[in-house]
Length: 311
Ligand SMILES: [Zn+2]
Ligand SMILES: [Zn+2]
Ligand SMILES: [Zn+2]
Image (cartoon, rainbow, N blue to C red):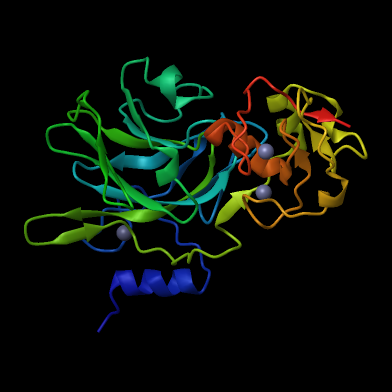
């Protein structure tokens, strides 16, 4: 008896042999939805693909230029499964998930899905809230029979787009690896029919580990740009960042200089806030500014327009 094509393929993939599939004929049998990877050419300027085109990583020097598309159109009710692998604690907003009826590769790729693409016909996208895009979290998205784009996150919450998608045209997946999200992995897709369940071609399992999932470093250049000052990268300044102090910065902080960050508990607290508390690391300082707006120790209000100043 011949082994099933699915098994042959699985074993080949296990042995590290690249299985080349011709379009629409993957050899897995009639139950297969076909291979599902990211489009190798149609991608944002800062995106690199790995894991045989299933992982997309955006360089953290920018929050934009992270657009990616599926390599083939999706079917109606084909649920695409994504894992968010890496985040960066900078910027507002996280990944955007959507669809397009414009064939990837037929137009130039702009830097953003929203609003650059969604302002033109044939593009639809939903921004996924930051707290649902943390490293190791997973989501599924699909288009329903009536043309509604749905995104379902790990916590069971469902986001749906009010505008209907034109389901009469072929529909590619579109993901913007945007803002805080900087690496995503395509886990596969599934389509439940009345009596059968169809899946995309089997692929090697990638377990979430501390190596592939977690928080990415913010490049020091990005911190400088965000905070609007230039001296951060100079020697001596990186260990001693502080805010321009106004009223009550008279507190003696010299004996606290080697304290650990009260947000992440892993890095040295090298940023002094306006209240005089040297309590956060440079990575967490950005989050403290953008998300909390106050000192984690004394709740002193931090003005968003205050910038760091090397001392
Ligand atoms: Zn297949
Ligand atoms: Zn920290
Ligand atoms: Zn404080």
